[in-house]
Image (cartoon, rainbow, N blue to C red):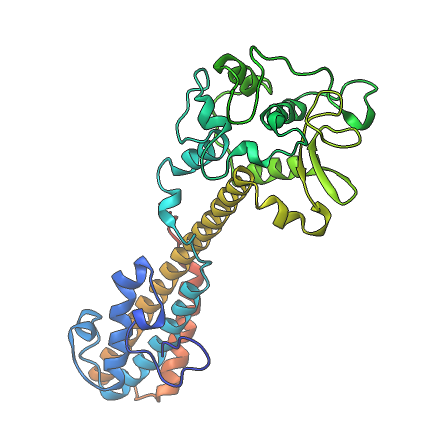
Length: 347
């Protein structure tokens, strides 16, 4: 009765073959499914006995099997409706989300904001941040990167053409790409220039919203995108503005942005959190639905036993299997409405 898909012509041999993996399946439903199979074969085994229906007559066994089968099939459909979890669950375990966010922003998983490692923040290996900054004067790439960050956090200079930032950014030393880095106080000042907030929990939709806000700040000119400030171009000097340039941005914005390591890392983190939340919501709903099905199957068992006792005592005429099924199904419908669903939550 456990079909993987429409192309399968016979039931799978076991739950694993049917791609079923759920805590309630392992704990409770496996026994019921095996009991249903044994009932159809008119055999006694531990699952039938544990279900308390080993002493039924042949007709009562067939009736029980006919009732249990659709309930078990319904349980399979419920479990199968759970949206999948992330491909790598360990990436969201414990403090991993915070570490992934810190890695994307600062180049390391743990960082003291008052004592940043300048080399990791600005020249992290695997996608040197400086390389992603466009400048005709390559010595000024790092300066353009820092300037872009400040431009995103402050209002445009009043009257500036095309929203250029105000005066040239001053530092303790001249900043060049990969050779002369800014001092730690300069980087600390940059990191705090957008303001600070108390420690808080950031949700996936907040991350996604902030990413969208950044992409909305990208200005388009001649099919290229500019994040930060520019006048006619982005040359990396104070007069013409400082920005990150995305070449041929309008042709494929998502593909272009995916090449920026920190931006794509944050986007992936937000998407992973969203998938995990949806999976957990489905899982919790499924637990409640399976609990309800357990009530139904327990009510079915009780009704079968009562009917069997009535027949054996001779106090009632023998009814047909169809009459028995109808009576039990009606009782199940009533019990389902009355069943109290426990509020269980998966960790």
